[in-house]
Length: 314
Image (cartoon, rainbow, N blue to C red):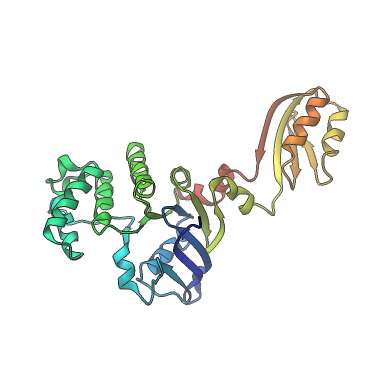
Protein backbone atom coordinates (compact mmCIF):
# COMPACT_ATOMS: atom_id res chain seq x y z
CA UNK A 1 0.00 0.00 0.00
CA UNK A 2 1.41 3.38 -1.03
CA UNK A 3 2.05 5.97 1.66
CA UNK A 4 -0.09 9.10 1.56
CA UNK A 5 2.04 12.21 1.06
CA UNK A 6 0.83 14.82 3.56
CA UNK A 7 3.47 17.54 3.04
CA UNK A 8 4.90 18.02 -0.45
CA UNK A 9 7.68 20.54 -1.04
CA UNK A 10 8.91 21.15 -4.59
CA UNK A 11 11.91 23.28 -5.51
CA UNK A 12 11.13 25.63 -2.62
CA UNK A 13 13.34 28.73 -2.57
CA UNK A 14 13.30 31.85 -0.42
CA UNK A 15 15.63 34.80 -0.90
CA UNK A 16 16.06 37.91 1.24
CA UNK A 17 17.98 40.33 -0.99
CA UNK A 18 21.28 38.49 -1.61
CA UNK A 19 20.73 35.90 1.13
CA UNK A 20 19.25 32.54 0.15
CA UNK A 21 17.45 31.24 3.25
CA UNK A 22 15.95 28.18 1.54
CA UNK A 23 17.67 26.80 -1.54
CA UNK A 24 15.64 24.57 -3.91
CA UNK A 25 14.21 22.32 -1.21
CA UNK A 26 12.48 19.12 -2.33
CA UNK A 27 10.87 16.91 0.28
CA UNK A 28 7.87 14.61 0.81
CA UNK A 29 6.58 13.88 4.34
CA UNK A 30 4.02 11.13 4.81
CA UNK A 31 0.84 10.74 6.83
CA UNK A 32 1.55 9.46 10.33
CA UNK A 33 5.28 10.10 10.02
CA UNK A 34 7.57 11.95 12.41
CA UNK A 35 10.09 13.87 10.32
CA UNK A 36 12.95 15.81 11.90
CA UNK A 37 14.24 18.82 9.99
CA UNK A 38 17.58 19.13 11.74
CA UNK A 39 20.25 21.78 11.38
CA UNK A 40 22.15 24.53 13.18
CA UNK A 41 20.56 27.87 13.96
CA UNK A 42 20.31 29.98 10.81
CA UNK A 43 20.05 26.95 8.54
CA UNK A 44 16.67 28.03 7.12
CA UNK A 45 14.41 25.75 9.14
CA UNK A 46 12.20 28.53 10.54
CA UNK A 47 11.83 30.14 7.11
CA UNK A 48 10.65 26.80 5.73
CA UNK A 49 8.09 26.54 8.53
CA UNK A 50 6.80 30.07 7.86
CA UNK A 51 6.23 29.13 4.22
CA UNK A 52 4.43 25.92 5.22
CA UNK A 53 2.18 27.93 7.56
CA UNK A 54 1.37 30.43 4.81
CA UNK A 55 2.99 33.26 6.76
CA UNK A 56 5.54 34.15 4.10
CA UNK A 57 5.66 33.55 0.35
CA UNK A 58 8.43 31.62 -1.38
CA UNK A 59 10.55 33.26 -4.04
CA UNK A 60 10.18 30.14 -6.17
CA UNK A 61 8.72 26.66 -5.93
CA UNK A 62 5.70 25.64 -3.90
CA UNK A 63 4.52 23.60 -0.94
CA UNK A 64 1.26 21.78 -0.29
CA UNK A 65 -0.21 20.24 2.85
CA UNK A 66 -2.87 17.59 2.31
CA UNK A 67 -3.22 18.92 -1.22
CA UNK A 68 -3.67 22.59 -0.24
CA UNK A 69 -1.17 25.10 -1.58
CA UNK A 70 0.32 26.92 1.42
CA UNK A 71 0.60 30.21 -0.45
CA UNK A 72 -2.66 30.22 -2.40
CA UNK A 73 -4.86 28.42 0.15
CA UNK A 74 -3.51 29.48 3.57
CA UNK A 75 -6.93 29.41 5.28
CA UNK A 76 -7.42 25.75 4.39
CA UNK A 77 -3.90 25.00 5.58
CA UNK A 78 -4.41 26.70 8.93
CA UNK A 79 -7.51 24.59 9.57
CA UNK A 80 -5.55 21.34 9.41
CA UNK A 81 -2.15 22.40 10.79
CA UNK A 82 -1.24 22.95 14.44
CA UNK A 83 1.91 24.90 15.25
CA UNK A 84 3.98 25.05 18.42
CA UNK A 85 6.67 27.80 18.22
CA UNK A 86 9.99 27.62 20.03
CA UNK A 87 8.84 30.22 22.55
CA UNK A 88 5.23 29.32 23.21
CA UNK A 89 3.12 32.20 24.51
CA UNK A 90 -0.05 32.22 26.60
CA UNK A 91 -2.06 34.76 28.53
CA UNK A 92 -0.24 34.24 31.80
CA UNK A 93 -2.89 35.86 33.98
CA UNK A 94 -5.37 33.26 32.71
CA UNK A 95 -5.57 29.59 33.68
CA UNK A 96 -4.74 26.72 31.35
CA UNK A 97 -8.45 26.02 30.90
CA UNK A 98 -9.14 29.66 30.07
CA UNK A 99 -6.34 29.74 27.50
CA UNK A 100 -7.58 26.56 25.83
CA UNK A 101 -11.15 27.85 25.90
CA UNK A 102 -9.98 31.02 24.13
CA UNK A 103 -8.24 28.94 21.44
CA UNK A 104 -11.34 26.81 20.96
CA UNK A 105 -13.49 29.87 20.40
CA UNK A 106 -10.98 31.30 17.93
CA UNK A 107 -11.41 28.07 15.97
CA UNK A 108 -15.22 28.38 16.02
CA UNK A 109 -15.82 25.29 18.14
CA UNK A 110 -19.12 25.09 20.03
CA UNK A 111 -18.98 25.42 23.82
CA UNK A 112 -19.82 21.80 24.52
CA UNK A 113 -17.05 20.59 22.21
CA UNK A 114 -14.61 23.07 23.74
CA UNK A 115 -15.20 21.84 27.30
CA UNK A 116 -14.98 18.21 26.23
CA UNK A 117 -11.69 18.75 24.43
CA UNK A 118 -10.22 20.76 27.29
CA UNK A 119 -10.88 17.91 29.73
CA UNK A 120 -9.43 15.21 27.47
CA UNK A 121 -6.42 17.26 26.38
CA UNK A 122 -5.42 18.34 29.90
CA UNK A 123 -5.54 14.69 30.88
CA UNK A 124 -3.46 13.71 27.88
CA UNK A 125 -0.69 16.21 28.61
CA UNK A 126 -0.84 15.45 32.36
CA UNK A 127 -2.03 18.90 33.47
CA UNK A 128 -5.47 18.02 34.86
CA UNK A 129 -4.44 18.79 38.44
CA UNK A 130 -3.14 22.26 37.52
CA UNK A 131 -5.66 23.16 34.83
CA UNK A 132 -7.20 25.87 37.00
CA UNK A 133 -3.88 27.46 37.93
CA UNK A 134 -2.67 30.58 36.16
CA UNK A 135 -0.13 29.86 33.47
CA UNK A 136 2.28 32.35 35.07
CA UNK A 137 2.94 29.70 37.74
CA UNK A 138 3.86 27.03 35.17
CA UNK A 139 7.39 25.75 34.52
CA UNK A 140 8.71 25.79 30.95
CA UNK A 141 8.02 22.08 30.61
CA UNK A 142 4.42 22.54 31.73
CA UNK A 143 3.99 25.38 29.24
CA UNK A 144 5.37 23.19 26.46
CA UNK A 145 2.88 20.44 27.31
CA UNK A 146 0.09 23.01 27.44
CA UNK A 147 1.32 24.15 24.02
CA UNK A 148 0.74 20.64 22.67
CA UNK A 149 -2.78 20.70 24.10
CA UNK A 150 -3.35 24.09 22.52
CA UNK A 151 -2.30 22.85 19.06
CA UNK A 152 -4.64 19.86 19.43
CA UNK A 153 -7.74 21.96 20.19
CA UNK A 154 -8.64 22.11 16.49
CA UNK A 155 -7.73 18.43 15.97
CA UNK A 156 -5.13 19.04 13.22
CA UNK A 157 -3.91 16.47 10.71
CA UNK A 158 -0.41 17.97 10.80
CA UNK A 159 1.58 19.32 13.73
CA UNK A 160 4.68 21.48 13.25
CA UNK A 161 6.97 21.86 16.26
CA UNK A 162 9.81 24.38 16.37
CA UNK A 163 12.50 23.37 18.92
CA UNK A 164 10.04 21.56 21.21
CA UNK A 165 12.69 20.37 23.71
CA UNK A 166 14.77 23.52 24.03
CA UNK A 167 15.21 24.68 27.62
CA UNK A 168 13.76 21.52 29.15
CA UNK A 169 15.45 19.38 31.78
CA UNK A 170 16.09 15.68 30.98
CA UNK A 171 12.79 14.55 32.53
CA UNK A 172 10.89 17.23 30.61
CA UNK A 173 12.61 16.24 27.38
CA UNK A 174 11.58 12.60 27.79
CA UNK A 175 7.99 13.59 28.57
CA UNK A 176 7.84 15.81 25.50
CA UNK A 177 9.33 13.18 23.20
CA UNK A 178 6.89 10.54 24.47
CA UNK A 179 3.99 12.91 23.88
CA UNK A 180 5.15 13.75 20.36
CA UNK A 181 5.52 10.08 19.54
CA UNK A 182 1.94 9.43 20.68
CA UNK A 183 0.65 12.04 18.25
CA UNK A 184 1.95 10.03 15.31
CA UNK A 185 1.73 6.45 16.54
CA UNK A 186 -1.70 6.61 18.22
CA UNK A 187 -3.39 9.46 16.32
CA UNK A 188 -1.78 8.94 12.90
CA UNK A 189 -0.94 12.63 12.72
CA UNK A 190 1.97 13.89 10.65
CA UNK A 191 4.60 15.58 12.81
CA UNK A 192 7.32 17.87 11.49
CA UNK A 193 9.96 18.81 14.06
CA UNK A 194 12.46 21.60 13.45
CA UNK A 195 15.44 21.39 15.78
CA UNK A 196 19.20 21.60 16.25
CA UNK A 197 19.03 18.99 19.04
CA UNK A 198 20.12 16.03 16.90
CA UNK A 199 20.75 13.58 19.72
CA UNK A 200 17.37 14.23 21.34
CA UNK A 201 15.12 14.35 18.32
CA UNK A 202 16.61 11.41 16.42
CA UNK A 203 15.23 9.03 19.06
CA UNK A 204 11.66 9.37 17.80
CA UNK A 205 11.93 10.34 14.13
CA UNK A 206 11.07 7.95 11.31
CA UNK A 207 13.27 10.03 9.04
CA UNK A 208 15.45 13.07 9.47
CA UNK A 209 16.87 15.64 7.08
CA UNK A 210 20.13 17.50 7.62
CA UNK A 211 19.48 21.13 6.68
CA UNK A 212 22.49 23.48 6.41
CA UNK A 213 22.75 26.90 4.74
CA UNK A 214 19.30 26.52 3.22
CA UNK A 215 20.05 23.19 1.59
CA UNK A 216 18.90 19.70 2.44
CA UNK A 217 22.18 17.79 2.45
CA UNK A 218 20.65 14.39 3.10
CA UNK A 219 17.44 12.77 4.31
CA UNK A 220 16.43 9.34 5.43
CA UNK A 221 16.45 7.08 8.49
CA UNK A 222 19.15 8.10 10.96
CA UNK A 223 21.33 5.05 10.22
CA UNK A 224 21.68 6.03 6.55
CA UNK A 225 22.54 9.69 7.01
CA UNK A 226 26.27 9.32 7.54
CA UNK A 227 26.75 7.60 4.20
CA UNK A 228 24.83 10.35 2.41
CA UNK A 229 26.42 13.33 4.19
CA UNK A 230 29.99 12.08 3.97
CA UNK A 231 29.78 10.03 0.78
CA UNK A 232 32.72 11.86 -0.85
CA UNK A 233 35.00 11.53 2.16
CA UNK A 234 37.11 8.50 3.11
CA UNK A 235 36.35 6.33 6.09
CA UNK A 236 38.91 5.97 8.85
CA UNK A 237 39.33 2.78 10.85
CA UNK A 238 41.18 2.81 14.15
CA UNK A 239 42.69 -0.60 14.79
CA UNK A 240 44.74 -2.17 17.56
CA UNK A 241 45.94 -5.73 17.03
CA UNK A 242 48.55 -8.18 18.24
CA UNK A 243 51.07 -8.82 16.96
CA UNK A 244 52.13 -5.89 14.77
CA UNK A 245 54.60 -7.33 12.28
CA UNK A 246 55.81 -6.77 8.74
CA UNK A 247 53.16 -9.05 7.25
CA UNK A 248 50.26 -7.13 8.80
CA UNK A 249 50.49 -4.03 6.58
CA UNK A 250 50.68 -6.02 3.35
CA UNK A 251 47.69 -8.14 4.39
CA UNK A 252 45.56 -5.03 5.02
CA UNK A 253 46.66 -3.44 1.76
CA UNK A 254 45.61 -6.56 -0.12
CA UNK A 255 41.95 -5.88 0.77
CA UNK A 256 41.58 -2.87 -1.52
CA UNK A 257 43.70 -0.68 -3.78
CA UNK A 258 42.54 2.56 -2.12
CA UNK A 259 43.64 1.56 1.41
CA UNK A 260 46.04 3.98 3.09
CA UNK A 261 47.72 2.84 6.34
CA UNK A 262 49.61 4.68 9.09
CA UNK A 263 50.76 3.59 12.56
CA UNK A 264 51.26 6.03 15.45
CA UNK A 265 53.74 5.89 18.32
CA UNK A 266 51.27 3.92 20.45
CA UNK A 267 51.02 1.24 17.76
CA UNK A 268 47.46 2.22 16.88
CA UNK A 269 46.79 1.61 13.20
CA UNK A 270 44.78 4.09 11.11
CA UNK A 271 43.31 2.79 7.87
CA UNK A 272 41.69 5.15 5.36
CA UNK A 273 39.53 3.84 2.53
CA UNK A 274 36.59 4.90 0.40
CA UNK A 275 34.57 1.83 1.36
CA UNK A 276 33.66 -0.02 4.53
CA UNK A 277 36.28 -2.78 4.79
CA UNK A 278 35.54 -3.97 8.33
CA UNK A 279 34.16 -7.37 7.31
CA UNK A 280 37.05 -8.42 5.03
CA UNK A 281 39.51 -6.86 7.48
CA UNK A 282 38.27 -8.96 10.40
CA UNK A 283 38.21 -12.06 8.22
CA UNK A 284 41.79 -11.67 7.03
CA UNK A 285 43.06 -10.89 10.53
CA UNK A 286 41.31 -13.96 11.94
CA UNK A 287 42.57 -16.22 9.16
CA UNK A 288 46.13 -15.12 9.94
CA UNK A 289 45.88 -15.49 13.72
CA UNK A 290 45.90 -11.82 14.70
CA UNK A 291 44.06 -10.77 17.87
CA UNK A 292 41.86 -7.68 17.45
CA UNK A 293 42.02 -5.55 20.61
CA UNK A 294 40.16 -2.48 19.30
CA UNK A 295 38.32 -1.52 16.12
CA UNK A 296 36.30 1.61 15.47
CA UNK A 297 35.13 3.22 12.26
CA UNK A 298 35.00 7.00 12.07
CA UNK A 299 33.73 9.25 9.34
CA UNK A 300 30.05 8.50 8.79
CA UNK A 301 28.36 7.85 12.11
CA UNK A 302 26.03 9.96 14.24
CA UNK A 303 28.94 11.37 16.26
CA UNK A 304 30.56 12.72 13.10
CA UNK A 305 27.33 14.35 11.92
CA UNK A 306 26.79 15.84 15.35
CA UNK A 307 30.35 17.19 15.61
CA UNK A 308 30.28 18.71 12.15
CA UNK A 309 26.89 20.45 12.22
CA UNK A 310 25.45 20.57 15.74
CA UNK A 311 28.11 20.61 18.48
CA UNK A 312 28.75 24.35 18.19
CA UNK A 313 25.06 25.08 18.83
CA UNK A 314 24.87 23.31 22.20
